[in-house]
Length: 273
Image 1 (cartoon, one colour):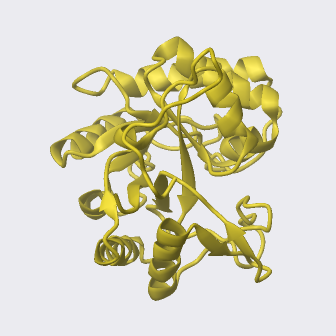
Image 2 (cartoon, helix red, strand yellow; image 1 turned 45 degrees about the horizontal axis):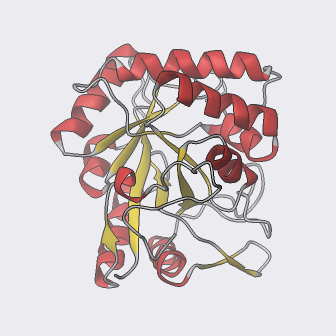
């Protein structure tokens, strides 16, 4: 079997009369939608609209919960305790789940500053995992490829998928370059498409400092509010298909729960992970 990847996009981040992202066009190019749940962006009306948009296009629905920070778009650090994080997660997952036809979500992907914090903060990483287990243990956690968070989730018995980013610069340790620094956002369509194909097919990526690092993931993300997102995502998908990469929903590629023996299975196998 050749390389396989899920294409996910952060969506539903409009609020009231303020529209963000080209969701109606991007939905045509993805297999999984990570939908804002009203804390960092989105509101009940936009949540319903985006869920229905995804369902109409056969795109799997996942939650994109974040800090309660509408003014800062969830990108500002907050001193929330692990227990507060867990409760906020449960609240947001339950809200989005209620808008789906099946009353089920495929996956959970934390947003912005909360996502970044969980990568290096074990209590917060565990709190997010606990929230998922409480709401629906069949949901997949989508987390940064190569992070300790992936291992923590597996040890806690979660289904897990690892994520790389088409349109974000990387540090030498595989973390995302801060949006406050040069090289954080990539906006050259050809560069993003070529980089994405290389990450998926070769498991390699260049960092902002010019180093070559290993990357391995089951899902490739791009943001709906990135400059030229529609053309970029269209080009990325076209180039992946040209490279004979199979594109499948996240739920088909996530690792299964870790067994008590310490082994873990994967179904179906994905050479890109």
